[in-house]
Image 1 (cartoon, rainbow, N blue to C red):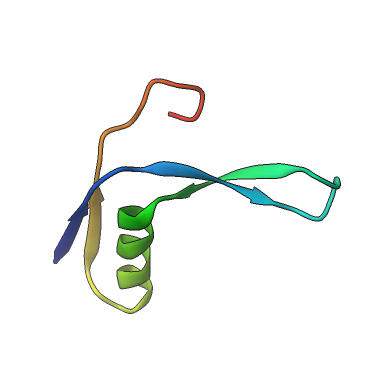
Image 2 (cartoon, rainbow, N blue to C red):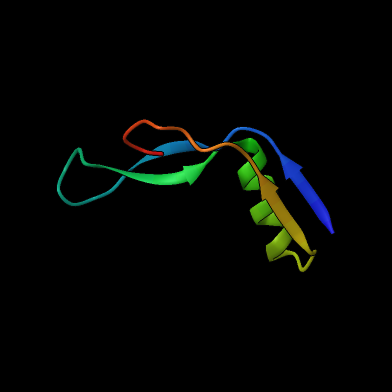
Length: 56
């Protein structure tokens, strides 16, 4: 198993409707790395702290 540790961020992704809208999605380099490893078939885990702000 590969354990990836690091920050968990929120990416604000633009969407077509309504114009100019942004949708929050999990992101950040370490998170995306763990996700990609899992999609490639590796046993992967992600370890991070969770914030107390509106996205946490």
